[in-house]
Length: 337
Image 1 (spheres, rainbow, N blue to C red):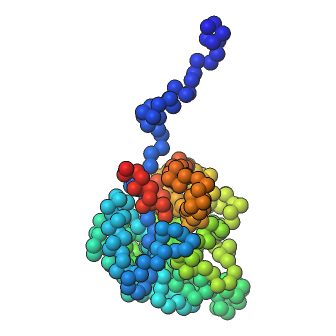
Image 2 (tube, helix red, strand yellow):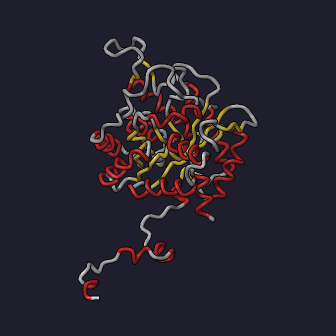
Image 3 (cartoon, one colour):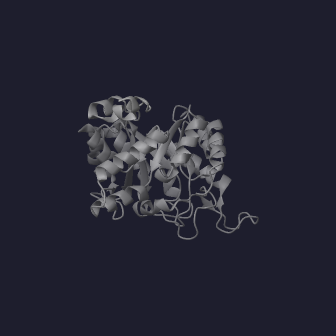
């Protein structure tokens, strides 16, 4: 007995010995309110095309959105983020800001039937350009830059048009995703000039040039036709640049910062939350992260529900306030059980 008392009397396991106590002391809690469900919209009617590399995710025509969004609303998920697949592509990606573009049609449809569902519009050009890059390419406009370099300021002018068009159609939030310098300031000024000063911006402030995006490019038909996006997206080996990127976007008036991908960049999420605790921080749990879990679960190698929830909790633990997740509907159903 005496020897037992000479040991350290602190026993952390006391707080783990029953389910009730574990629930009482749990520090990180997932909520359905944390989730944003991505939705892929395409032209046509009666289209509900499963994405082969992303089981359980679909390309949907506008007439299918009511059924999809009813499910999302019934689960309690507060928001969707829309990605469009245009009818035709060209070098300037003009459908991105057309009044009857696919995102504009989808937004009007959703707001007609579900006015309280938050619609976030992805604001970029990669899905709409025939070259698959996130902006206007240099074609001898600037002799000092390489051929086919994404022109920064010329792209900003188009992003302004896209943002205003999306909000005019009813979007509640703009999410510029191209990592174009000064995109937040440019879009903010365009929205304010058009009396949309109440519309928040969710900036893809830290978007890495990641191989985890592979399945998304199938889903949105937005793979580059040549080259890559390393001239504007972040190098996965770099960390210090994220603080500069975030500082610039915060100074220019962003309302949300985003880190993409999430699971392989939990340290980045934590760093940004420490740097800007006053700003909402969103983690994008990207397609490759989703598909890996789905594939392993299909093979019986892991428990899909437990691994998915553990991954989502890790993102919140790192500091995310919201999570854009293809798992959102499944996770919401599990939480609602």
